[in-house]
Image 1 (cartoon, rainbow, N blue to C red):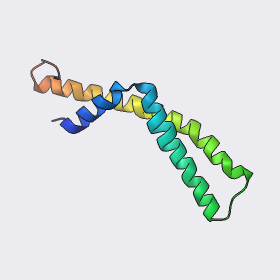
Image 2 (image 1 turned 45 degrees about the vertical axis):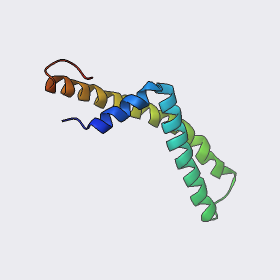
Image 3 (image 1 turned 90 degrees about the vertical axis):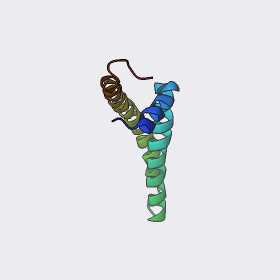
Image 4 (image 1 turned 120 degrees about the horizontal axis):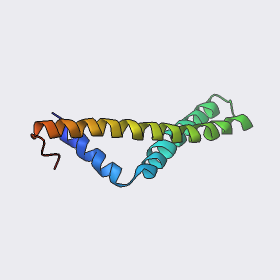
Length: 95
């Protein structure tokens, strides 16, 4: 059976919309997080140079792509979960 918490959690996230998800989870979460981590590692390893800032400029658009990919993937999983719920409940749909 579908994990109710995962199903409900995604329903709440998707209510905010696709672009909110892509921006918050992709650009800020993955892009800024990964770029910031790479910048920090470069700083600790004494690799600070003007090129180090490129980490942020590269990973922010990468975060957009990652967020878009994850949105599409989660929508695919959600649609499969809806089908399973519909089959279990006898075709009545998810409540």
